[in-house]
Length: 206
Ligand code: HEM
Image (cartoon, rainbow, N blue to C red; front, top):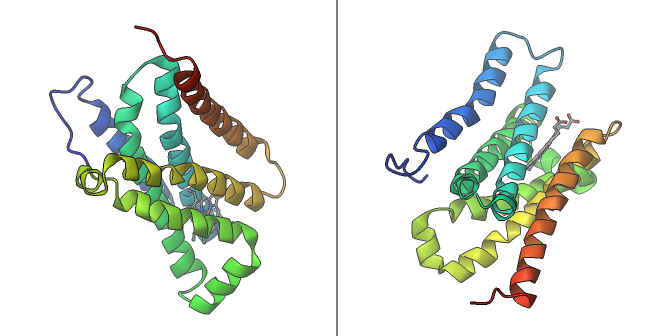
């Protein structure tokens, strides 16, 4: 992860967001340790970690639209860190499913992925997040070349769509919350499309 630069504007921003991003994990761990996660603690922790992964992925995808709409540069400085936290929470979510929920039974997991479309969508999201996290360093950007790196990282939109489907198909009753997330993500995508269209067809004059 990029080192925290003390001489950049808002020097507290990255360390502050980094520490804040770990708080939900500490709270879930503390509540689990003290038997405060309810009757089905495993399901509660699994859902909590999945929710956090989705939240961080949404925040990552919103950094650029917020910069475009507001002109602020700070959201983009947080993008890589937020994306890595999305991957971190998604990996914990999957690890919990793999170890505690499915007891490391690969055959059961395979059957689950094949049978339940919501598990398949989550699995594909995680598969996409792996190369994105692995190529998030400055060294990898240099090795791949910026254009190829940028093309690869367009997969983050697909990850956003698949994660939304995973969430929608998992929620059986009240879809209000997940639909609010989807509306925010769609609005973010539209801002990006509008900017590309604007640059292409209405280039600014000298
Ligand atoms: C192999 C990958 C994955 C598997 C096997 C998986 C599996 C699961 C399972 C079993 C649940 C709980 C379902 C229930 O209690 O009925 C769940 C919930 C959830 N997962 Fe995943 N998941 C995966 C990846 C992801 C990823 C990558 C994200 C987001 C980036 C994600 C976000 C969520 C969300 C938002 C929920 C619902 C949380 C809530 O209701 O509060 N999952 N997932």
